[in-house]
Length: 470
Image (cartoon, rainbow, N blue to C red):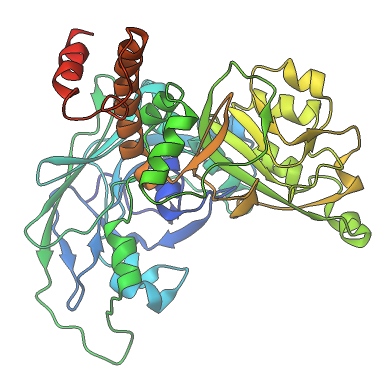
């Protein structure tokens, strides 16, 4: 018997954590879902059996919500009242069978025992949800560590309200709210543990030993198969930046970052020809993109009004994001003005970047967040642009920008950093600036730059002594 009696339905969210979105190279504007059968439920300690012929069994530590009151078309403010319990969950799946039910995940994630829950329930009314923490261990090693209130693209209430618009949630229904980065492949003999905690309250560790199947899987029917694309997805292809890394980017100059990117063969990550409304303010955030097309009046009539792509991008912005606008470098009309920029700031944006013009420049300069732009122009965007789509790869000021990229700006300009190398770029850039600070002290003391800049072996002992004294 699982900690939750067999529910009418188990709804799972595809991508809800920023770190997972960066890992996948996408930034969804709203949640998307799939269903898991109730026969996939398991208890703590139950083995998770890898099917015959499969090599890509992956875990996904998650927070599970248990519905306590019937929910039909509830708004976000009232949604949390319909959640009775939260607990730990593990959304197992085999990538070898994803192809068989593309989109539904039925055979890849719906296998018996592939949804362990528990071992204890937490009452969300007594738990400090701001301190809710999700952790996963494999063989005792911590592999996932996330704080949902800070890391999720969509809050729990957002998910409940969104689902209830069209799907009635009944008491006992379970919502698996998505996994952060760190999910990877496990094999028979491994043990996976998941814990959800809030201060001194905890679900305890949900334990899942991995075993090999003792049955055979015969045709007819889809058989397991794996290719390099599925292996890369299952193992995880990059390590996204944490918010701690993001904060540290505001302490490093874009000139230094550009130098480090160039050393890695990345010369196309510095945006050209932009200036900022706040030269003294540094900016670092995750890219949320919007693309404008050249004006065509019939398309503007269908795409330019109401909640067009520009306004949707503003309303979808999450804290710590930077709105990046692809205006094709056309500076003959404004691409954003004071009201929408203020709304972006109110929603937690860290900045705005456009390779077009801005309107209401004085008002934008009075905001707390910087806006990087190519020009100033009084005309509205409808003079030259059609706001077309959001959350796609775009070109801005000569640089390809993908949703979830790290965008850093200062008085010199803006650079884009692939999230998978953000931590190493930051570490090397910090060391470079430390060395250059030492070099500057020696130049100020009258030393010649030969052998000093860049730092040579001759000067390294003196540098290390100086560094250790700081």
